[in-house]
Image (cartoon, rainbow over all chains, first blue to last red; front, side, top):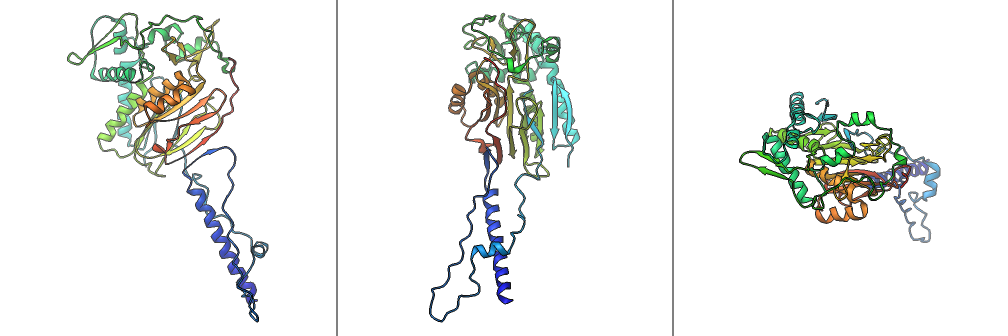
Length: 96
Length: 334
């Protein structure tokens, strides 16, 4: 039971960190020329490296693979709204 | 939070936002006064009096004098490409009364069938030196103007933006820290918008309907003016379609590859002038020309093929922006 709980905690933390990184790269863009819907280009975080395989040393329970996380924990909804959706335009420039 | 204040003047819709009602009413009064003085269609306007009394000195108000001074400066700065002396050419094309009356008499223009005028076809004569001589003299002591015969003033290309900028300057001088004046699509804004801190300005689709081609989010002093060959186009029966932006080199409607141009500047009349110049020059000559001559101006241009061109200095005016690459446009026949 403890192992499953540890897996769950690490999985949620990893997903939250991944989501936060994605939001940062989208908001940081100041301007863009739109050709097609943008997709996230954030890289997935690296899975933690397992310790050197020594004799008589069990693999720490905190070491998991990314695939295991994906199969067990659904990523939470992106908490950061897309930029500018709450803004409204005041007027428009046009030929008169 | 202030409520936007809308009114009609100069044959278009004005909007004043972000200021008190009293301030907005003051803007309205300024605009109405300017309209009475600048319109070439109003019989008693000062511009019309100058046009009627060529070769004679005409005393004018300080408002009209200042406008003419800046119009002459714009003519010089653009080497005559911005030309406020083409009233007669405009009349010959049929734009000799307020535009809604021109439209009433006009055959509905099928913009998709808009075609270039053939070289030499129905061209009014334009003095060969029209771009170098200034047919208007100004006397600062008498506060008077004298126009050479054979010319007529048409300040329609500068009056709206110039008036809106003056109104905004007046509010800023009174300590109004933020606001927006929209003169029929020529916009000047300053400070931060009250609710969202940035002013959101769309750039209209040249068709006049459909999604905006760009969204700009601005704060601080920013002016933008848009010129288009689509909005004020008409067709007299039996004649080709024409529009209101005259190429001073030919005396007829400009025939470049640009449908619409938006120019951003710190002053609205400057944005107005250069938007028209770019329509005249087209993209291949105009964009390098403005980049070299006025590197602090930014632009968004729409070509006839629907391609949207953007200067690489939009960040001088917009904190954030989103610009389409292309707009759906049925290419007019050439």
